[in-house]
Image (cartoon, rainbow, N blue to C red; front, side, top):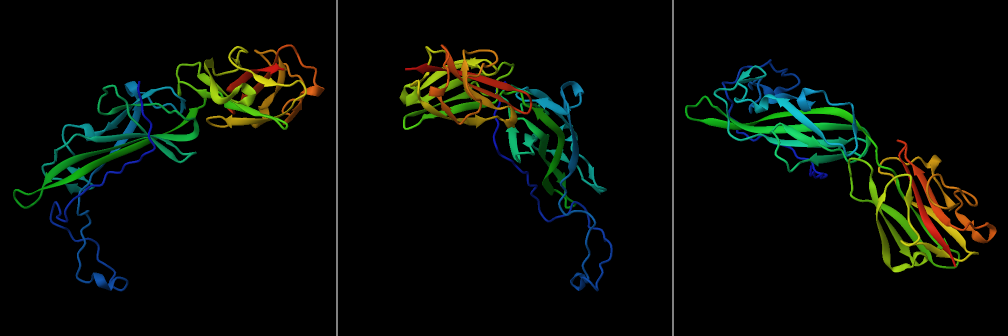
Length: 337
């Protein structure tokens, strides 16, 4: 299903004249001591312009309740249950009669996913034909507090007391369902490396395709800078599985340094929700794949290779985990010159 998420919010404004749908009735008497300017003024207890607000409930497909917890990137068909879609408009609103109401246009419908933690609204739309009261919601960002919302407006017309005169207005309907969205995307962290009094380089992953489902996620890894022999153009390694076994092969690219180089290493990037910094690990290891076998200190910002017993197959490794438990372990080969 193709979907588009846009940071946009719309509001429907009901337009109308100042002519009442029925003769005004006298309301409660005004307190003339506090409001002397209302002397001789009669105020109707009904609104001058009738704009019915109709209740709306949101359900999952087949009438099932919306789950309290959704999963990132997993589509969910939602249904709006409201009288706006009935054959005839309401004939009464809050005790006020609506004479001879008629729909004059189809309903205008807006579905949103709201991320309350980031205070962002994401409009939902799909290209596949669906019933007017249905939508496919695909939450692409995890959140601890969110909501699915639906806003509907439908133009209607009703008779005025004067013969032959009609009034146009809008019937409005809206509803919401609170949800949270689980994170299923591993962190997207990389490394920035520089040699003391020498060149630098960086390696980092990018999720591609974005928001992929079903799992596993995939990523492209970029190598940049003179240390990766990529000073003029980045090296692109495509199609790695984003997870705990991301291995860059020596024939694809390598960090080239001297045996006595002093490396300054810094983690770049992060997670699409929340990174667990207490579990972040990086450094030099022996070989690639599985659980890294560190050579030298972990998480050292300065790594002096001359003080280490370098293995035959040295790799830089980066082990990152988010608060949901998704793990990324990336191995980048090191070539000693």
